[in-house]
Length: 427
Image 1 (spheres, rainbow, N blue to C red):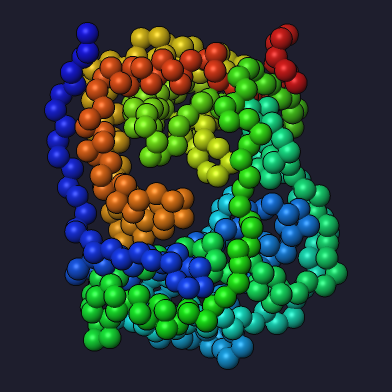
Image 2 (image 1 turned 90 degrees about the horizontal axis):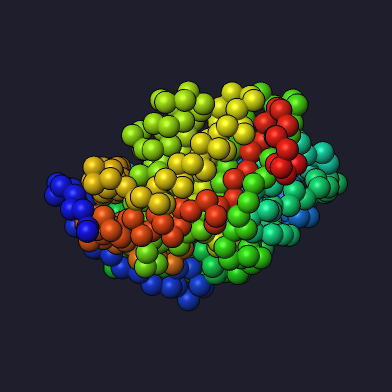
């Protein structure tokens, strides 16, 4: 019998958007989104930047750190002064597979921000380049555990798993590397505009300015994309690492999952929320409130070009790793066998629908979310439609997703602790 949860309170939707998306002749995938009345404009340039070539690792990091600091017509101070005149903030973030250049600027200064962005991309200047250090710092305990988790779960070799040795390069030509890696073909540019200007009254006007400023940008694709894992589904089991020097116990799992927006993702997401996605989740109550084992507990669905997996992430006091593994396994088994209670399913729906509101709460967060969707090939309106998708998932759907995806028989449980695991644990 299907349990019916309490009705879902309507979630306020974001303001109506006007969207125009096209690929420029130079290969730049461009999305212009206009939200009437928004005082700020946001730009997000998403570039493939996965660490797929070990020899490039040190110079990739250096290039990302110095990108956007100077051009052939503006030195570092002139770039900073121009950004200040516009009231603009430029920043870069590097993830496991992307380099994201972000710009926030008052709406009326969007033309100037596009001009400055084009200057930084088309006419970069890096000046004297220091020697890249030959030695790279040893990976921390969490990084070591994550690499072991992914290697056991998905096989190798893979850029997310293998730590390439740091090799210093006596002379680095950052300008040549810029020309090779910072290229339009394969990149995504999202412009979130609002307040109209005399020259940019519509999405077509914004797109025309993008074409004018970035039409001469050329090159690519860079090829810096994560390859898929060797295995599509994680290899289950138990992996226990021992490090006498660690000051905490860490746990990571890898279970099967389906990415958004594939069929079945929404039901799995709700099961994941019940398991460990919020403050009242089962893992939080069991590990923190009941047993006092963990001071950090989380569960999430991870997805990128390499693959998709359900991950539980816990940290506790040293010596608790094996107990954490036992309790996490028991929690998975109980939820997979019996499914969530009606109250848990109701809370999961409320949380999953509500997170869309918080994810789009500010223009900066909205721009980052939309740029991420565009870069991953998803529809720009996916998140705004998500509450409707959540409302269509029944308690029975969630229970079936839990039974299929959360069973311990399909999950790898990996720990790193100060003390060795009991007999039978892998080292």
